Amino acid sequence: MAGCEGSREPSCLPGMFMPLRSSRTTVVALVTFATFIDIVAYSIAVPVLPDLSRRLGASPTVIGLLFASFGLTALLVSLPMGSMSDRMGRKLPLVAGLVALAASSALFAFADRLSWLFAARLVQGAADAVTWVVGFALLADLYGPAERGRVMGLVMSSASVGFMV
Image 1 (tube, one colour):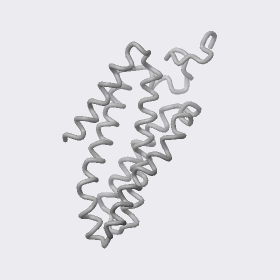
Image 2 (cartoon, rainbow, N blue to C red):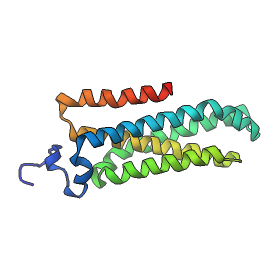
Image 3 (cartoon, one colour):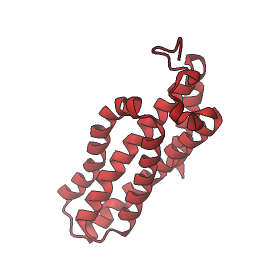
């Protein structure tokens, strides 16, 4: 598009993903929902993880590694995810992150072996990174500096509500 070189204005974004970006309110609602659900899932997993791990025969060290596995994958996936979503678009990674979060949470709920708990926590960490990085990148695409702080504050307040639930 003429005059769009390097611009992040909504009218200059690739047309392939315009339906997701066309309604800013819908995008804010989706990102708000995604961050809320992510924090609720995290808040449910953390208190039950030590007891569940002990029932499956985990030592305190293994329980610590289970906690660390989430953070490790969140870190490793967060770093490249922003630039990847710049190249491939926001819709597919955001939807994939939400699906992965749902699947890994179900795996966590029904895990009957430590290996399944580790798999669930690793995928939950990756899904967390994807939904947060891509969700906030999408908001940055749609809102200029004058509005961005207000919108991101709104989304972050949903994360705070997720901790309280």
